[in-house]
Image 1 (cartoon, rainbow, N blue to C red):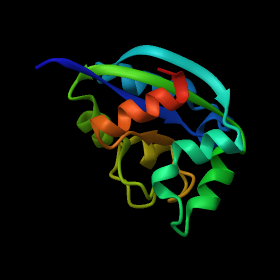
Image 2: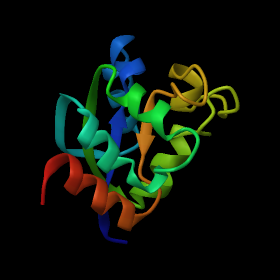
Image 3: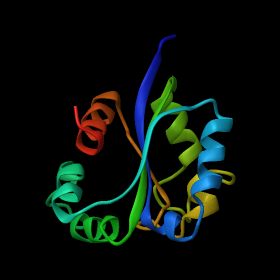
Amino acid sequence: MAKEKTLCLIKPDAVKANHIGEIIAILESQHFSILKMKLMKMNLNLAEKFYNVHKGKPFFDELVKFMTSGEIVALVLERENPIGKLREIVGNTDSNLAEDGTIRNKFGTDKGQNAIHASDAQETANYEISVIFGK
């Protein structure tokens, strides 16, 4: 099986709580290679573009406000089956329902402030990587 890429964002709540190193250690323990990484702060335009698929949904404005509230760490990760594996170790979107031992279970607080973003499909990952890191 060929190696593929995906995008992961360590969200403002986890950055503020100093969980960057712990999250990266989990990712590396699961055989993800970090190809690109940057600490950044999303502005309104970037957040709206990144989450464009959710525009018009009831949680869109709250999500954009949260994602622009502080610094994030953006990572391009690589391994075999990166999307499936990352979503497995990230856990349920709602941190309160996330499986024991998952990143959201350990570091998230609720459905909105859930510590980490993981692309849900290869097409989505390609789009998100281009939005954050350029073509």
